[in-house]
Image 1: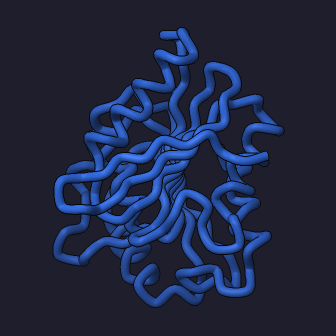
Image 2 (image 1 turned 90 degrees about the vertical axis):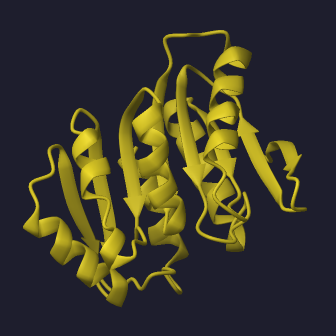
Length: 192
């Protein structure tokens, strides 16, 4: 299977690309890490999308990440809802690295059911405690590789705070990019 695509060219020449697989009223939005495409290396996001679609019958949107594009991401989700013609949708957000942080920001303004953040990247001084507290009603799963040095500091910060509905999972042997662990990365889609 492949994506149906929509491409937006921004005023500064950047291109934001969205890939869609249409299914039922469950909508899963996947945001790539910084600089990532809708397919990802080794087609990891396309494989995740296909796995989610096959397992849940869900509609899946994958977003590239040349820059922060929260307003376009929101519009892509709304466009998908209109195309499905179903206002009783359930929205699930899955982000990788910088895409995880963008999904946290997006969840604040959307009616989200679950947020899965894989190796989320935060500048330690900009730890999004307040944003996460505002998302208390949303189930949140943060996944970190045990070999991700940046992740160790973030896990430490998360463990110091009480953040409602937050679960932390560790993947043994994974670094920030899940180097040589593509299958383990793709299988994280089962958390949706």
